[in-house]
Image (cartoon, rainbow, N blue to C red; front, side, top):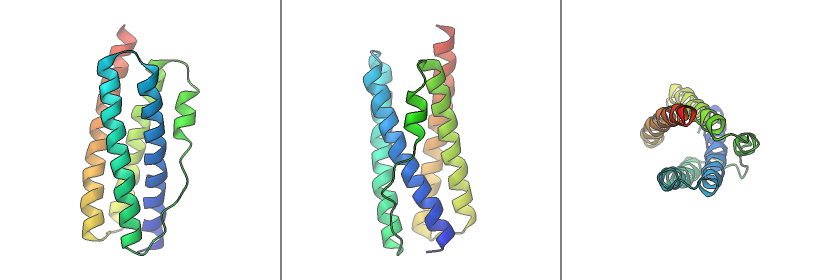
Length: 139
């Protein structure tokens, strides 16, 4: 595996771990059952993405990072759900951009296919978070 690709995949791995922590915490902080269900669903996806990324890195001769990104801490320091969701949306967009950078490196077909699916999920989550932030702002 190209070192640049391994570095990007590990950054994504660390971001997914942070996303899992963040969504889990946000799920516990809200009393809205619909929001809890959405956060729980997104949490499950983050956990799955983490496992797949770890496996792909190992399969292609890399070493998965054991770190967790600091994104969750940044978002949870904010004491306003509207702003938290705005930052969550920006985080989803960041992941999609990093995936695009990894795809430019022409990863092996299995990594390429997974990253494309992952990018689509993050773009969907980004749009959902933007819509939810608007809804929260209007309330």
